[in-house]
Length: 384
Image (cartoon, rainbow, N blue to C red; front, side, top):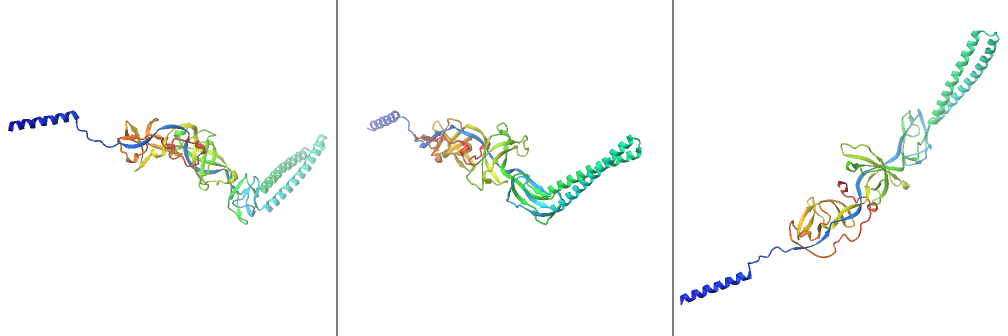
């Protein structure tokens, strides 16, 4: 009886084993896939630009100095006044210089009269000598007298010219159209030649001077547009065009200076203001972009997640401009890569993902041209 029970138990165990083998090996459930949405890295036509920072300087500026010595009789302008070319700014002891001119003119008239008298005396002795009446010594004396008064006339004419010039210089005038930036003297001040009187700037046209990294040297040309903004007009763009390009690179900064002319309409811009903006190097350059939401920045690292074979791969990227919800990618991705747009907060490198179908955000509307963007949109774009 015991043998029969043992045989039944053995047969039962064999049957159970056969059922397990037929059902296959045991399957342990793996980690659940994270649902994400993706967008494809694509090219858009954005202007190729470089960020620039510099200052606005007047096209022309001069420190008007005294050209004669004397007391300032009066000043006619003060700082902030607009002036025209050759407009009187101040008078310096003009009465004294008028008197000196009158004296010089009188001396010239006297010398002219003596010259005429010497000329007549010389001509008379010349005839007498030809007739054998006048002696050679009298003729030589008359000739010497004529030469002396001729020289006196030249000296008197030169003195009169200097006196006339000094009188003109005693009337200080503006060298060009512009505005008075500073007045250094007032009525009663005694000045010498070379003393500063006024600082005049021509702010109708300004120069926007800024450094450009040397790697862009082959792209910078005269006539390229520059868009910039200033602090006192936030959000407003001003336009200039390149007209000066330095032939030398500064060894300390590895950059070269570029100057753009800016028409200062209604004199809204102030000379020597700080300005920032961008220089347009190329119109409609192909630019790799991704939706702004796909870029993750944490602890100083900027990255995106790329989907490869249903797995998320972390990629460090270098970013550029932001426009219309799109982020420019300068380095780190390739065209056609699929980047995770939503759900990346739950991802780690190598995590399994499930792509949710649908339209990715940020790639529906074409971006506008860079020239129409306000200043300040070119973040780190100079690195590409």
